[in-house]
Every structure is written in structure tokens, then in C-alpha cells.
Image (cartoon, rainbow, N blue to C red; front, side, top):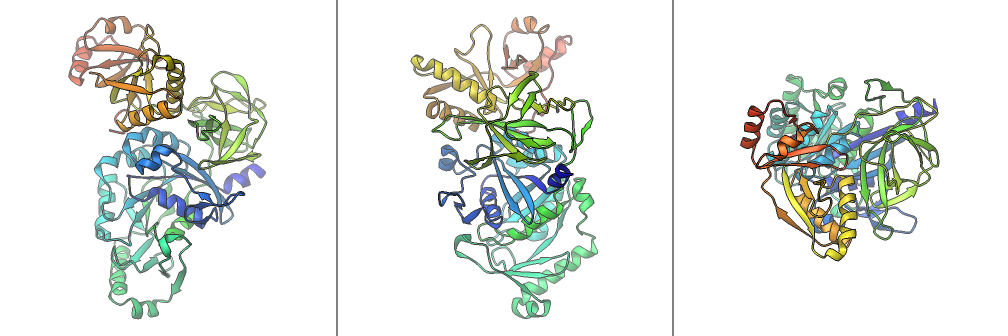
Length: 528
């Protein structure tokens, strides 16, 4: 009962958005409302005020974009909230996909002036592909933007998902007065605070007073609400959980307008953890022995220690620090002595965790993305693997200073394990000049930056002629190797990828050689 009651208190969700929609700002404000920040930008910590860095990597701070996902945990309204911040750029959508595998829902943040941008539509489709319940937050309502109904129509048109307003703005974009909660008709007026550094004071105003003081803005909002009621655009929690509608909220993360309403909705609407389906299609009961899977590996979060952290989503049972679990891929025992909860770059030793929680296992050198861990005293369990995206860009990597080859090889292996890039090798040449595969070109920039700054191995990348990849097998490899414009390389797990110089050449090879194995990669094209 302890495990079940604790699991029921968990809310585990991700925030997804396109760049500059305000995702990282909203993450920070959630922490502010959850009491985890002293003020915007200052994390509560034993040794004083620190930067609330969900974007902790130096390159992220320089570029002003999220590159790597971050796990954050904080209490709110009696619940333990596990918030996973994800990259906003589609070049890192493979990382977003892995993080969504560990979530029970997602919050989609949209810039009210831009709506859904085509370049990042695939990020949202990834979320729908996993059939995650989706909340929508129309951000930056304090600035000039598009019409409310126009934005709602766009979401339904592009995502095929009706957006059902739960809160409704009084005042147009750029003249935001407050929001009406359609569930009870209450009107909350907000007061601006300096740069949103503190929780915005909220004032509940009765309708008669609101009509007098807000004037035309109030009457316009009332007409809109009447229209929504006539078309039946009302919140249906069952439709939300079935991914058949997305509850919508309006506000401004920068000034804290509407943030509290959205966070309340996370607690009220996002489902607690449910039994996970294993590789055999069986649902692992929440109160069975401990089990979990690795959805992310990240090195050098603490540059002074050069450590490596495996992020585990707890799926069942009670995790206790120091317990010896079984590593599903190898069948070997694994000691969890060095376990921590993560708060951006900050960490604290964790003594226990429950389904829905995210635990960081420090220096888990043998653990890879997709690996399952379980209590050896209970039934073994292997969870489905997390699929890789098909790489769409390919570059040859070489270390500039051959005297730094050892560091280069170690760095390449680490980036491969983390999924920063996919490393493809020719067995005859090994790591002398591996090919790097990526979903987006920015991944190459991250790889070279980290190789130089974390491993001391300045690297140069050279373009290749390859444009498309297919999974192949040992039987097909000799014939493919004899063809011009084709290379067969291997991943670290031993799987083979056949690379082609053009989609047209691939089509010809497939039509003329139907006996060859040339399979599309799982999740291919989702990010492109």
C-alpha cells in the first residue's frame, strides 16, 4: 500500500516547445510556484542562491537554446512533481523522444504570436506518436499576438487534436488583464511583478465588478465563452487521457500570468504512474519488486568530477539506495550505492524513490539508454527498447592532434552512449575516422564542442556523400559492400547500417536486389 499511495502522489511530465516559445522560462516559474526557487533564477539550496540552470551546459547558455534534457523534482500541493525539460530545437528531437518515453504526459508551449511553427511540428507529432496526454499553454499573452480562436483552430488543424480552453483570457494579446476559469466561472486578475521574479499576486474579482472595471475586454470575453459553450468545447478529462483533446491555458511565463492555473492542472489532470508494459506485452504491477529503465545517459554534468549519470524512470516497487539490482541486458548484479535526485545541475543523494520518479545513477559506466533494471528477488522484466531515429546527416570525424587520439576515442564512445550523435564505424578502421550520424546539423556542433572542451580532443569534421541509411544484416553485407555509392558500417551494439549516396540509388538497389535486407529504421523521419 505504501508503494501504491506514493505512486499516486507522482506526476511525471515533460515540457516541449519550439525554440524561443518560453519553455525554459516556464520551467523556472513552475519551480518558483513549487517553492523550489527563492526568486526567478535563484535555486533554494543549502549554500545560498544559485542560478536555476535547467540549461546547465555552457554551450546552451551561449546559444540560448536547450540542447540536452534535464530532470527536475519539486513538491506541489502534496504531490511529488517530476518535470523533464527537453530540447526545443528539432535537431535534438531524438533526445526529446527518449525523454517522452519516461513521461506520463506533456505540456506543449506555444508562442501566441507564432502558434505552431512548421520546423518543429514534428516534435509535437513525436508526443502524439507516444499517445501521451497533452496540455497546451499559449504563452507570451502579455505581448502582441494572434487571435485566440485562430490559435485554437490551428492546433486542431495541424495536430488533429481539438484544443479545449480551460482558462480564457480577458483582454487581447498584448493587453492581458487576467483569465476566466471556464470550470467555475471565476475571474482571476493578475498584477505585474518586476520581471516575474516573484509569484504574481492574484485577485479574485466577482463578475459584476469585472464587468465595470474591465469594460469592453470583459464583454468580448463573455461573448467568446458563450460561443465555446454553444459548440461544446468543454473540458473532458477522459478525452484528455485518451489523447483525443488538449486542454488549453493562456498566460505569460515571463510575468507569471496563468502559470499557477497551469501547474494546478498538471496536478489535477496528469495521470499518476500506471503499470508499464514489458517486452512481452505484460503490465508490470506498480507494487511488484523494483524495476525501471534507462532513458538518458549524460556525462560531465559536474565538470570538476567528470562523472557519468544514467537517468532511470522507476516503473514499479520501491527503490532504495544501495540495493543490488539485476542489469537486464547483461544479467549481472548492479549496485546502486551512488544514487541521486537531480535538480538541473544540482544533485542530492536519494534514499528512496517510487514509480514515476527519476533517479540518477552516478558513474553507471556499463548502463546504456534503453537498459532495464529490476529487483532480483522478483520476476525478471525487460521493457521495450527505445528506438533510434534514422540519421539524416553524416560527417567523418578526425582528431586534429594525433597525440590526443586516446582522449578522442574516449569522447567519441561517450557521445555515442549518450546519443549526442550516432557513431558508425568500419570494423577495419575502428575509431581512426568514424562516421558521425545525426538527425540535425546542430548535433555536430555539440559533438565537436564537447570533444574539445570536455575531453581535450579538438576535432575536425569532413562532409560525406551519404544521404540515407537502412538497417541491414550479415548476409546482405558482402553484396552491399561490392556496390558503388554504398557503405556498410556498424554501431556500437553491433547492428549494421547501409549508407547510400542518394534515395534514388537506394530505390534502384532495392528494386534490383529484393533478396537484400534493407529495413527502415524505427522512428525514421519523425524529426525531419
